[in-house]
Length: 412
Image (cartoon, rainbow, N blue to C red; front, side, top):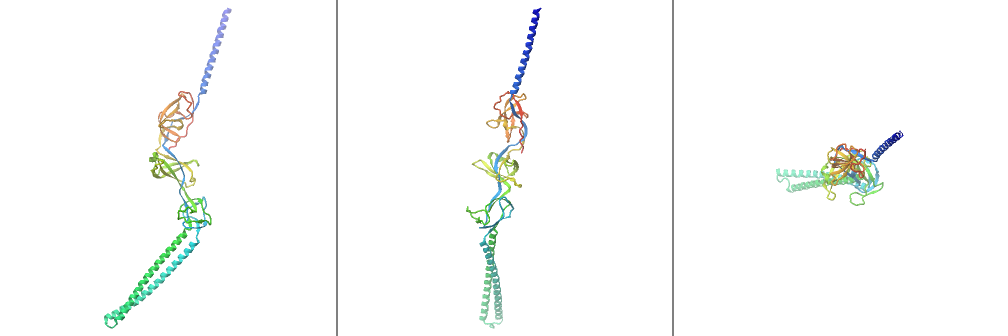
């Protein structure tokens, strides 16, 4: 009886040990599974999505005024007054400065005097012509009467008397012709004097320096009393009065690559991004160089940007986005998710399967934007592609995906 109880006790003790061992093994397996889950790396992923994209070309350029000049003086003189300074906005025809030229004022007085003198000479020549014509009328009438009497009654008037009357008639006629010539000469002299006066007054008009177009004074060279040389020579000593810029319309000169030239045309609208202002503006292609540079293989292209509010300043840098193809719907993934191939028409991506395992795929690529790539084959919409560091990942590896969606590429 005692033996049976001892055997029963031994069996119960063995059962307890077996149950305890089984529980420990299960706990160890659960801990190992949790350890695997904890050790699975977290990877950043994004979804392959369909969006409208287009082929774009970004070119950097510097804003230039639509037109900019140094305002010169036509005549040399001293600055009598200057009405503008840096930053002033002026209208076309607005008075900028007045020059003082004392000797030119004397020339103007002299020219006016010559005109008055010439007009007086014309009046005197007209009087002389009138006297000559009167004398000729009397001489001609006397000769005509004597000739008629001689014809009616031969011998009544001596031939000598008739010849003398004829001679006086011819002399009087010659005096009339001379008076007419003198009057013509005096009238021409009046024209010469008037031309001289007009020239002098034109030069006097150049003492008033005006704005040739609407613009902004960006620099002032002269002050009151400054001696301004005439801006009619190529001498480097010629000093302008001010620098004037038309800034309500700005230019951007772009070197468009040869491959993109066929896609650029006059009137094409472009996006102009200005990093300094963190803003974008609309521009338009207005001029094409129509010639490829042999040195750079680019074509000079000008884009105009309206600047009526004067927020853009010449000299600012801008990034011009030229759209080289029409927007179309395509499957896209972030550029950061692709390891590009040698020909840039294919690449390799790492995707996360529904079982949260890494799988590597080769894909065919299409258009590229600033942030995305078009996928022609190899992926479907909704696939999760790894966008972060992929160097330590292996095919079949368990991972924990973290969705980080990138901003969609705007269609132009």
